[in-house]
Amino acid sequence: MAARIVLAVRESQYIEPLLHYIHHSEYGGMLRVSAFSMLDAFMEFMQGEEVPDAVVGDPSFIEAWLVEGRNSVPWAVLSDDGDIRGNPSGSLAGGQMIIKYQALPSLLESILQLCDLKRSRMASVPKEETLLLGVVSASGSSGKTTLALNMAKQLGGLGLSVFYLNLESVDSSGLFLRLPDGSAPGLERLLYELKASAGEGAKRKQER
Image (cartoon, rainbow, N blue to C red):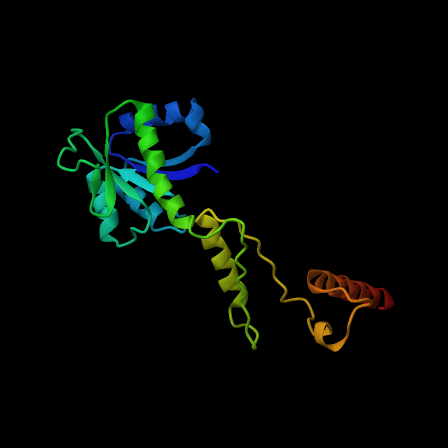
């Protein structure tokens, strides 16, 4: 999956050659870049629902974004003069510093390393295991579907694989009042009930 990068730089002359290089190199499959040269457009995008993997930009753009307090995404400031001797590791408080004018492969590798910070945070959850989240309520019209859909969207925005299953229209009383033929457990039993309910519904329509 390509890393989603937000690039915020005043000079469009800086953005265009960089995007051209990405699209015509091996980095085209690694990076998906949303670039902005206007502060207002950048801020509007960052206030939206899409969550990027990293934000890289001029100091003025990054500072304006950090003031909003939505800085849970790895970020880096592009250094015009390339002087990071005051920060030997190229790091700032909460972020990184990247030399703005350098060989494009080196620049893009630095951005990819920035994305690795987010991946390392997510690596604590074993990929072999599936996390199951359920949204239930004893009463109807309580916002279960809206909540579940928004959760799925947010988790998907974090790069996680999400499967959303809505059982609201399924009559689950059969799971407690009757048993299917045989001793089918777990998922097999649920699929049996879904199929049986669908068959009964079709039969009623035909009788009408």
